[in-house]
Image 1: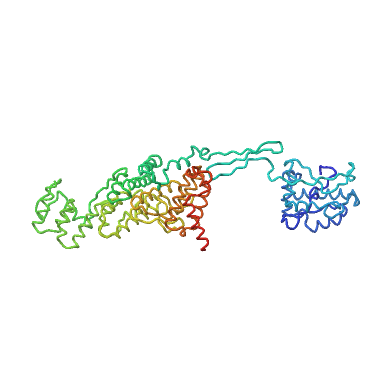
Image 2 (image 1 turned 90 degrees about the vertical axis):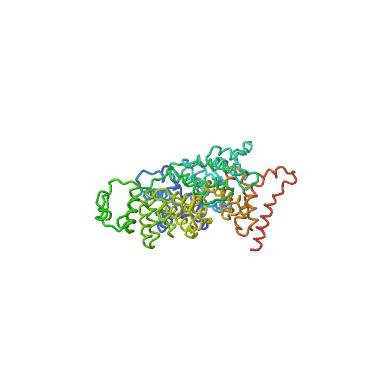
Length: 608
């Protein structure tokens, strides 16, 4: 041991009481009973447990800096043996203490002192090591030390340990104020005559230029205020299309389509018809897909391959006795269709018309025949259309079936989904339930493939109501955002703004329109974000509109959220310019809406 005249330093600290819960056992220094103490230590497995090893590695400076690769338990054992041999050489009669606790008689126990001061044993012992720095080690002996053991002079008494500071060094304290400020308390030395300095910083100024603040400042909300014109809302939507939508990607085009729908709703005061939406859908298509036609299948015509070859141009026609030309004009095709009817060959005339794309002639002739023939000709006609042709969608819908496009859209091989929705919206059949089911099915298919914006467009066309975030069975909760992801990703600022614009468009048509899940939850969340970014006046306006909606429909529907609105409004009420203009003696007054909402909350609490 490098420090001469000092015994093993872990004996110099008082033992922790049973109530301190410290994870190791402490041992007192009793040089008058070496052998008995050694036997006691052997019975307690002294220095061998993992917790003691952990303690000495963490706090003992010599044990913490042993040679690399050396076992810490072996190191401590060597110290213990050195300590015991030194004690035996000194003899049992030197340096005894008057009590078992290591304290001189007549003085209060150090354990009792720091327990009365509110310190735990761990805090007291840790302060011994860190008070003068991590590298400086200067143990304080508990009680009187007989220097005669080392021959250095008269005995001296160590001072009582001082209460450690809560913080080891000066630092800046800060907090966020409700008025959009950051409050800093700068470090100072009052003992040296320094004055306390408190700084107030505007969060709006600190966050200037950040994307989040610019997104909040650009939005003209709250949209329920009286001085708002709908042109401002339409301008905001056009800016989002220009700056926030990447039209080179499918998702960017779908997002742009939602913003264009909001512009159209705002322009037409929340009213839409199918043809308006179809026009919007076709405008947003980047290109008109070319749907390749094909010949009807031989099986549909009822002909074998040999029969089909025998009826090709250039072969002798056994009915008319003529050899048809290799290249036939439209007039020649119609003339042969007529000649076949001269001889009463209706089925041959139908096959000729179908093979030469005279579908009008074939469909009219078959409609005057039996229903089976008409269905056969109709099936032959639809087989010539491409699978992803919007005409297929229309004919399947008119036939009373869910179109295949509603089940397969969203794939890159299938093509764009917009023309199929446009043809369903513009040509509604008599069965309104079938129309609704087809559009909802298309939305579900798009949602299953990750096209959330496109799916929500379909749901809006089918008048699907908005649900709640935790209700995963609902189809949508915020416009353009999937509620099947984490809430932090779901409740994005852009999604809340888009939802508020949709609510505003609904209120242009029906002033009493009310979306309760959005009105209470997400507007309160948006108001909190405004306050966090240093915009308290705008946040207070949102609180006022939320309170008005709750008072109209009863705060009892959402009592917890109503109390949170009251709490936030109480912190932000001084940001009201009307309150600041009041005389000084009336500035303690509160807005009427806040008093009413608080009264409703108290009444609900009393009732509960």
